[in-house]
Length: 75
Image 1: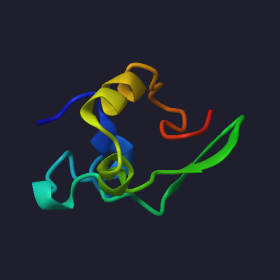
Image 2: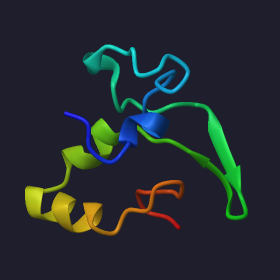
Image 3: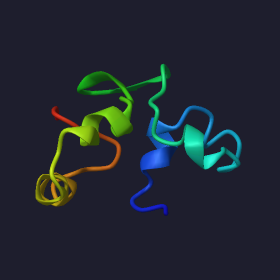
C-alpha cells in the first residue's frame, strides 16, 4: 500500500528506480540528506519509528505531517 509519498524519502533508491524497490525494503530510511532552509534532514527508518505508536497515535501524527519537511519529530 502506498500513501502520502513516504517511500520517496524513506526508501533508499526509490525515486531513482521509479519505484522499482521490493516492498520488504520500503521505509527503512536513507543516508541521503535533504537540505533546505531548516538545515539538512535525513530520512529515518519509519518501520522503527511507528513500531512504538498505537494506531490512534499514528493517525494523529499522520494528520500533521508535511511532505518535504522532517516528518517525525521536527520541523
